[in-house]
Image (cartoon, rainbow over all chains, first blue to last red; front, side):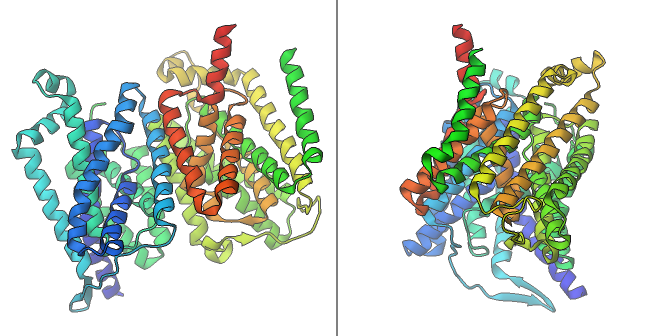
Length: 290
Length: 317
């Protein structure tokens, strides 16, 4: 039993790394563009289909397929900004309307995937060795995803804190009007943010591809998971999202071993509902002014 | 006067329709439209006052499963089961409603809490697979044609039955319109804080409307389950059915009496048209168009199709 638990905790931590990346992307978009990207998991799914198409259907090396998926998903992010989010911002839609429009978008993306790639499971089918420390077994693909996600997060941290563009993005997130007065063009920053957010879905897709097989409804659960983490950590709070990802990763993974995967997901959802009701500012408790 | 005439013609058309076309398929589509219109109208009881729920699948699942399980296990008549299922939905609505309204969860946050709730019910139905049949769902015991078992081998029975239910749902809408609740809810929907300073009991009114909506939705789910005689957690709860209910109502226009019905009519017809014309390989295709239409409508016509037309005509007068 202790071995099982140890394995579960280990897997939870490894999963937490990728979830942190997912939550980071959603948080960034919420912080800057002020939109709850309800189709974020679906974008990851799209990225996985891109990897599948390149690697399996066009027989490219998997690494190359993953690398090509990044700019492709970046472009998808820019397209979303110009086709969906810009019109929403222009129409001065309230947050609820924005939420519904993006929920409608999930239907479009999921069914597009079904028409193009079919309803079956699609995986890239590569075998990576299993590593074990004593009785704790770890899949190499999970390990790669974990360290890859941490490296990506480190890169994003440096980008947001050390470069001019990164600082411009953060200033827009903090105070739109002042940033505008300082000569920053919000529209350009919105596009950049959505491009980075899209790029991130490509990165996550690359890490997920060796782990999961993708199907048209793959994205929904990850959107919900990412959103649960974002709320748990406090909307727009990057550090909170990072910690929240590991909490949710470990809690779901351990409770899945103890009970069943459904009960684990129910637990995560109940945590989510409770946080929104009782502590909407998130665990770290930094109030984001609306 | 003109509206009354229009209504009589419409009702006459619905009644005569099955005898005109003699097609079981078209009668089936008509029945589906009535049942889902009933459910989307129930959803709009709340939606029209700014309480946008993205988790009505929770009430669908609870209503249909309570009724279906009691019938299969104990042979309890669905007519009684329906009331118990509705009651279960009301209890859940009270729980989540009180929590949300007490803590002032409104707008997009309310939508997200309900979205999670719908998923919780779906996962619960799957998790207790020993009782509910899990992801595979279960079939109702067949009783042939029996009024007590609320089953029929004749499609026409369900066609007229669900039409009668739809009329009831529309009458409830009218009843809400005339009750003092309507004014209070409208004040709350427009400006919650202002309404509370004027002494409107916000929590109480919101609770009542949520409970009515939950109960009616659960009844609609039973109607659907009795017609299809098969219950599945993915078609009766969780995110996709919850979103579909909301979207049908929004597309038609949730602020007007006929809006949800018009929205359901359009979407069900569109889906069936694509299924028939392009075959099952293109099932996703109709959904893409439907999704795109939704996104465009939400951005450019927030009142929905019927609501916008209505506004247009009223301006011309």
